[in-house]
Image 1 (tube, rainbow, N blue to C red):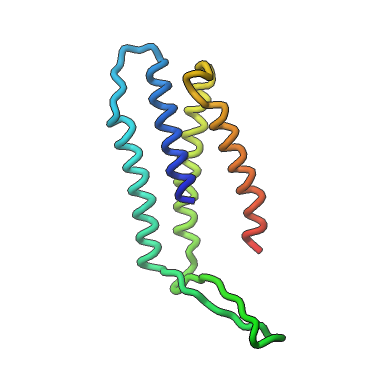
Image 2 (cartoon, rainbow, N blue to C red):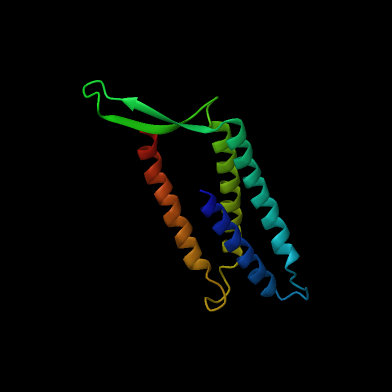
Amino acid sequence: MHCLHVSSLLFYFQLSRTNQVFSFRRKKVEINRVVRPFLVVLMLSITVLIIWTSINPLAWVRMGNKNDPLATSGKCKSVNFSPLPFFITLMVMIVMVTISLLAILWQTKDIQDEFVESNWIFYGILAHLQAWVMALPIVSL
C-alpha cells in the first residue's frame, strides 16, 4: 500500500513539472515545488504508520483445528483495538493522491506522448483500481 502511495506521488510530481514546462508561461520550475509537498505527504503517511505500530501492534495468533489437533493456522491480529481508523486514514491519503494524480493526468492529456506518459500512467492506475476492486471481496473473507 505504501509503494502505491509513493509511486503515485512521484508520477504526480513528474507530470506536474511537465505541465508547468508546457504551460508556456515564463516561470522557473524549481525542485522545491516538487520535493516539499512530496516530503510532507510521505512524512504524514510514515507518521500514521509509526503511531499505528506503537499504539496498536500486531501479534501472531495461532488457532487450532477442532477436528485435527496437530493442524493449526495463524494470522496477525491487532492487540488493543481495531486497526480500522489507521487503515481508513491511510486509504483517504492514497485516494487523495490518486485523485490529484488523475487531475494532473487530465491537464497533461493534450501534451504530445513523446514528452509525457500520461496515457500509460492512466492505464496503470486503472489496472491498479481494478485489482483493488477484485481483491477487496477476497481479502474480506
